[in-house]
Image (cartoon, rainbow, N blue to C red; front, side):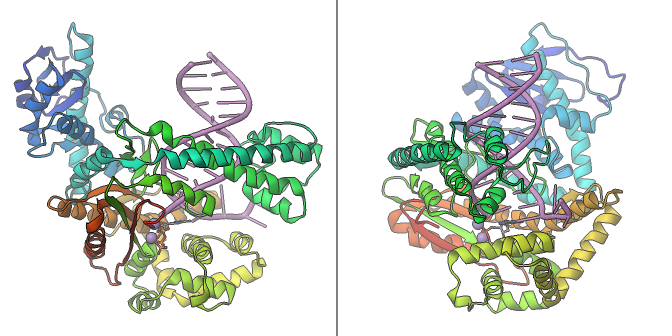
Length: 557
DNA sequence: GCGCCTCCTTAA
DNA sequence: TTAATTAAGGAGGCGC
Ligand SMILES: Nc1nc2c(ncn2[C@H]2C[C@H](O)[C@@H](COP(=O)(O)OP(=O)(O)OP(=O)(O)O)O2)c(=O)[nH]1
Ligand SMILES: [Mn+2]
Ligand SMILES: [Mn+2]
């Protein structure tokens, strides 16, 4: 066992590219350099990318790498594909400890009592690569043994591993950006912000940095003497957050209303309108990165830039979506699961009322909006339905009467009545949640429909608040995680369908897929996309997806 | 100038 | 305050 404390340091052998796959085992790749490690041998090879890619593409099935998406990008850059995928250590480690740091260093330290000693070599860079290959091989033995033992083999084989080539393709395609749209928005916002800034400084009686919460707090709560509504969590400073500004504006103060307007526009300009153009590559497209080992629940995340939080809720923010466009002669096609987590909850809880509602084609978000507002469901506006979404997800994930009352603008007593009525209407949901709490306490973990695990700490913490937070995580994770599993399966199925259809999968936004297709094919692609997404798994309630298509993401939603 | 933390805001 | 979940990013501010 090479992880034994007595394992001697190995001599690094320099080999030709063809030798790497005879040794791997663990495989590590960096520009111009590759290393491979087996039980008692570690080798490295300096060669140009084309040569390394050609040598590796053929026989990766016995190898383990830490991050296979990056290896695949390298192979595809050089015109290759892998005949069979290598095992991916980062994915195995993620399934064991989602939400923990997933780097080769962190994973090795977590899973090995003794790290393999560094190999000897005069080429220090090659030695470092060799060490990474050794760590990969050693950690993988432990990690994949545990993946099997904990019943995670199926999630690895059927979901995470087949998703890797899908994500690599999405990152490779990227999405086209119309810079003229952002330019125009930037000018409009710039002019508007300059005006707001003048008004704010005049109202405050002196110039200050509006973007600084610290300086703003001095103006609001010291110079102007407004009441402190709330304090920040870490430093206990007076909060200047949107909740506080809304409250102050509601009490008739003029400055907070101006600050709110300034905040919305400043955020749009700095985070999206002015930042996105800097991320556009030479091909006119933004190539976001999709991360598969970051979230605690099994969702993907997106960065550089994050394309999973592009504004949609305000009309001004939504304008940003006009900048995300299809290729010439093509259209964007998007599909979004309807009420996804509520449907998952209906299936997993078996609650008869909820199941019956979905079988009858009801829209629970709309029904909640109608109940809260005392309107007919047909009269609910999109904004009202959006607000009801927050209420529904808030309630099922443990929101209290205090927060609900604040959100709805009703008394705490009324809010409590609403919560009681909600769970009386869905008794199976309440029972399911009690069962989850029980299971989490007993096993220390909860699982999704497909067996993905999240371990939950602090369920017996002495503090009631910490304990309650852990319980909310225990209730959220199986539902959010199952929804994540479902769309990952859909992505794999869509990718397979695309092998012989002329369209491209570009983005995933948690329960939404964005494709582009030749304009003439867009209606067909939308129908097929819907069919695949709805049929990827059969639950006790129907899964439905809403589709749209158009020249930009603004219309395709 | 860089890394890190805090606060705030965006999305699902 | 007496706290619905999961993420990423920008600006300010600080230490180095
Ligand atoms: N806990 C929590 N989860 C949310 C929130 N917003 C969205 N989600 C989760 C639950 C949703 O089912 C899922 C997808 O978000 P969507 O905006 O697409 O909502 P949903 O599918 O429920 O409704 P839809 O029929 O698509 O309008 O993400 C939120 O504010 N809190
Ligand atoms: Mn949805
Ligand atoms: Mn959605």
